[in-house]
Each structure stands twice: as structure tokens, then as C-alpha cells.
Amino acid sequence: VYDIKMMCHLILNRLAETQFGCVALISNLNSVIEPLRMTITKTIKETAVKQDVDRNEEQIRSALRAVNSISQIPHVEKH
Image 1 (cartoon, rainbow, N blue to C red):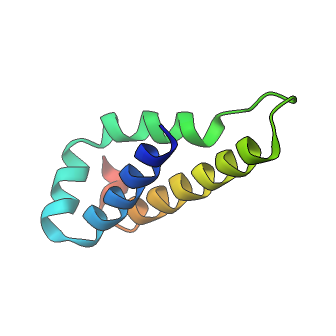
Image 2: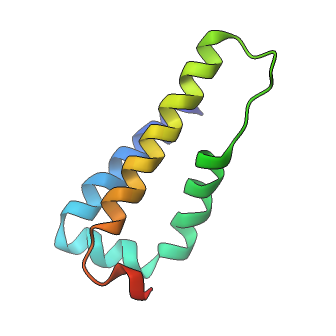
């Protein structure tokens, strides 16, 4: 799951950089936002090992980069 989420965030970053990708992202924004929100707000158990903590932090950073890329799309705030 970790690797898949990281790749998806990378794909979102790349899509936000292209004209066609921007159109696709804007038209599907509602289905993209909720999974990103869930990743960013996910909490891990206190008993989690260091590797799980690190992976969770990496996923949060990756999701935030995707949100930042999407927020750079012109007129995205209207949607």
C-alpha cells in the first residue's frame, strides 16, 4: 500500500504540471481530495515501530507535495 500511495502522489504531481493533466485533475477533484486528506490526517498507533513512523511521515510529506502541486493549478480554487 505504501509504494502504491507514493506512486499515486507522484502521478498527481506530474499531472498537475501538464495542461491535459490539469483539466483531468480539476474535473475529478472531489475524488482526489478525500484520499489525500485521509493520508495527511492518518494517525499511527503509539506502539508502531520506527519504520512505520518514518513511512507514515513520508506519506504525509508526499501527499502534501501533491496538494501543493494541485493548488498551483490556475483557477483550481473555484472548484
